[in-house]
Length: 154
Length: 280
Image (tube, rainbow over all chains, first blue to last red; front, side, top):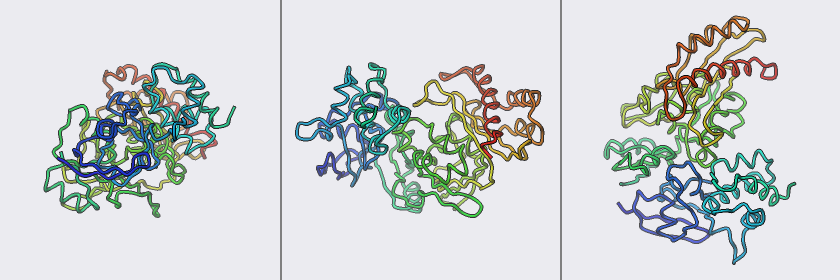
């Protein structure tokens, strides 16, 4: 069954008629073509689908799109400004925290949320803040280094 | 599938009776089932706009936690952290940050997983579940809420409104063991709550999860530790009783043998936590 959705995605107003059962993940990827956000598991167990809705990080695979009515959604595509990487993205690149890249969009969104809440996190807080995102490549250390760097620590 | 968004509980109950639909809280359980094609609701009734279900309110005798309160909100709440540390600790260990940002205490107990992390804390703290349905309101002691794995005691039109936790002045503690430090279903979890006068417990509740078909109080074990000096013999006897009060199975998260061993160790650790000087 079709329902209307009005929301703001990366600062732009969006209005679409969508299937009521569509998840936010599929809305972003299939309806809006924002394929940065990934489907890793479809069950809230990997974090690859993480986006920020009204300032809160969520697994978009478990979030019905129609519930985003009137809300502001930030995806990985929304971090870059006029061709310049966000400092978190740049720090990940600088510290070799990206290998296959599949976890990276979701991971970076979780890091954004972490730093928004806790601008100077301890290593323990960093690891906890990333604990909803799995990476099979890096072993996480380069990400911790990148976050310490971007938060002006160490 | 339709998604309906009532503005209050009365409207929600009416819609449920009209459509035969299912209530939706944070979606961190329901949407897993929908995505996996195991659940095909004709209609989901989203409760996120029903303001009566939100908020944490302190009364004289109890604290009421709205059913739609997320685990992040519980984790961060200073009142709950001060009065009921087992509850905030349990909330802090559910899933990961993104899951905690959406998962709600009401939705979680309705999903009735035997491994639910908040359940032992609520059991040990003596919580009551306030429920509203087509036939009115009722209060259910949390110990009567879980009937079987994934089965709660509610009828289809009933909504959990809030969870009331009595202000008993108990100390409390919680522990979870899983295959990972986060994004893990508990292999064993446990909460203890009680009053300790410096040498003996004057009251004690022990609740274990992931060790039985439902999260469960272990009253014989708890009673055996009340009013006594906690010698090694007393603790060993308590561990024996604990083995009689849980009925673990082998499953994908742990074996029964592992659960029995870890539950005993957890009991000792948590009792130790409650009796520490600095917890006074």
